[in-house]
Image (cartoon, rainbow, N blue to C red):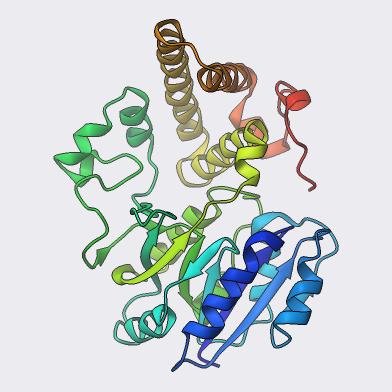
Length: 330
């Protein structure tokens, strides 16, 4: 098998049909299999896939295993020379997977491959990014992102000088569409399951680089990513999840000192964002601004109270924000 495509599904009936259709009708020269790992969907997703795409292999997990573990369940049964991690809310351009596999074959020195991910309106989404560091956290916190236009060394979470229109080495590619050599992915054990949602793709790419394999981006492969609606519906829950996993990442790669420096930068960032949004709301009040103010208030209180080292080592964290957050099943 040349290509295994792993799709994690959790109540994605509204989008997964378009994703599967784009794969099945747009991939012509590559032998592939599709493995859907279902995290306990209750919206008819599984029944739809069985009826409309009977060749798709479905693994029913029975509950929400979250992103990393849910994907790992599927990765463990994949037979492909290459494994594509793909979100259900994506649409693959006609012929894109054939081009991607061909590109990967032409670059045996690389372990993983990024592609041009687009928004629904065709604009560049920017899913190929630099690795997080404490320095970059401070640059972002102090509103100094524009410095990244002068040098990638000063970049924070995006390559500002580069718009994804040329081939290049990248630090990491978002897990919405990431192609990895199958043997390498299996040897690395897939995703690190301590990262439930966010930073799991950053960590995987970090380990790929650490194992001696570059990650190469090609603009010739295009995939549209509609962006999941759950993160918008349950903003506070996913925001807190983002901070938890940021601390896990910094602890893993920079130790207890690094994660505490990261927290200081993050608290500064949240304070400045609160001030900025409050000022904007005084000038031109709106419900959207008030929601952002409330979000950053809860986030600031949570980060003020949390000890990031204890969070990582013991899962101990403050209860702040829990009453307003959607409790994602563990």
